[in-house]
Image (cartoon, rainbow, N blue to C red):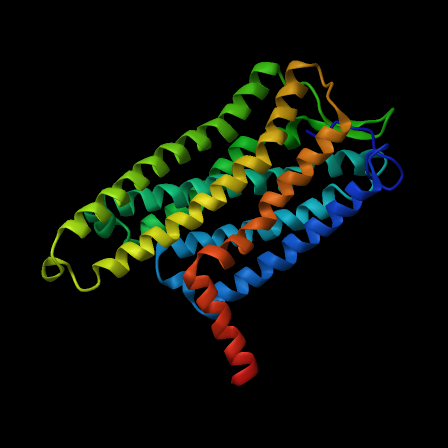
Length: 304
């Protein structure tokens, strides 16, 4: 919710300068980091290896656009008159990207869940183009449905010149929080617990079997699954930590008739954009294919 007074710079009054600078820096880093991530995936054609990597690339594109929307709509002045109303309603694009990013990650989690828990079903279904298109389109459908309230209810409160979601019921707001945040969290937690238990069981069985009965590439396949799972768990951890304050602030907004702490609200928006910024750094630390792609680009540039 962006229901706070903004000064002539377009930023809320009484907000420390360090927070204003942090918003510009984090938004800019998000654009640069996600642009580099897209280049790595496309240059090395990593996205062609599996549906997982297509969804990783899709996630990076969404987060890049979200970071750009953050710089546009949360760091410039709210215009006067009709332009201000349009400006507030166009904040839809930032919220749409945030929610789409969340559900794209949910799709990634479910895709890995099926691959690990139901490998036979995964091999039968994942090759189909329809599954790929459905996986890529579904997050956008969820994003539109769950943020359509912004262009409907958002407007400028003229006396203090701020964007507010006006006229939306408390029940509607709490329902949105449930679907946007609690449902994805529950899906993630369930899938990760099941996947970790399955991989742990596989490791135990692998140790008990003699080497001659194991497939030659079995360890490599399980290593790839474990590598991707580690990446997803790190992304999920960052998602939970960075989005909880924003949804707490939104909850307070709806149950408290629009009253909440200004600094807390501004920090929560900053953390929301930090979530869009962090993924490429996680890829660098935990995804072997991404690191391999970076090394290939380095070698091609300096030794090609």
